[in-house]
Image (cartoon, rainbow, N blue to C red):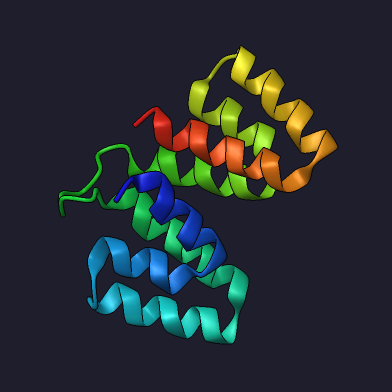
Length: 118
């Protein structure tokens, strides 16, 4: 399963996104508790787990930067694209337009751009 699908699931239903990456490890149970008690911290934790773990079980060396870009992409989509790309690009302008016109497609596009660079 692609990392983008894990990120989407982590943003919508955080425990499922975490489960796809780490299985029933402690990170899953922590995320389930955070999601049940406080939904947004569950989302942030899910993005942290997904950003710091590759699908094959190896840790991601760029996890911190990817995590920040994912959080920005979820809450301020153009900032997430700029954070990941580090420059003004066509993807940034497309994201600004999508975010201004339709918020959720802007979020999806930002997360796709962020994960696609990995």
